[in-house]
Amino acid sequence: AIDAASEGDTIMVDASSTQYDGISRITINKRVVLLGPGYWLQENGIIQEGGGQASVYSMTINAKGTVVKGMTIYYQDGIAINSSQVVINRCWLRRGSISLGGSNCIIHQNFCRAISGIPTSNHQITNNIISGLEFDASSYMSGISDSYIAYNTFIGGVPRPMDDSNWGLKNCTIEKNIFKDVPTVHSSSSYGDNYVPDVWAYE
Image 1 (cartoon, rainbow, N blue to C red):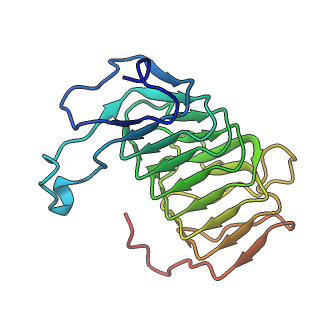
Image 2 (spheres, helix red, strand yellow):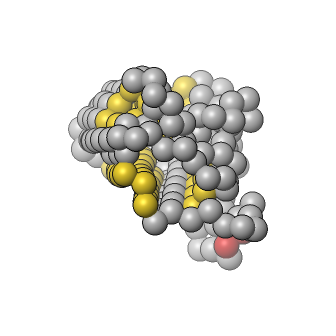
């Protein structure tokens, strides 16, 4: 469907018990909208979509302005973004993370292990649940600058605050998030109105 699509087309991706791409990475080289059904539908009593998910192995996005909504990404490679103005919304990355290589992206309402840049800047990262990577407890969010990071829930860890120019969070506004542990924030970032509960009840 991606190969047959024209620039700007919307591809409706139905829920399926079969993973769409087997065990190969999907590469998007043209601006399209992938619109899947979302995730955890049955768990939330939503049955009109059939209760299933639209699942792929992993994904690379090379096209400016691509939108991916409601998809399930199965493998730990997750979603690699190599362009700007990409929107990732309501996706479930079951084992992986979102890697930002472009700029001016919107990362909203996803459930993922981590969000990181290489480095990258000027993003809106909001309302995500970030569960953390088992193999590295310090890098649930890293390599991002000049971005708005708000209304996220950090289940398993905190952003990396290191002074390293490539991997620290720099010049970011970090507010209204829920953290499991108190983060140490880089001095160039604004940190306010975040919440660290005395008793953790979000797992």
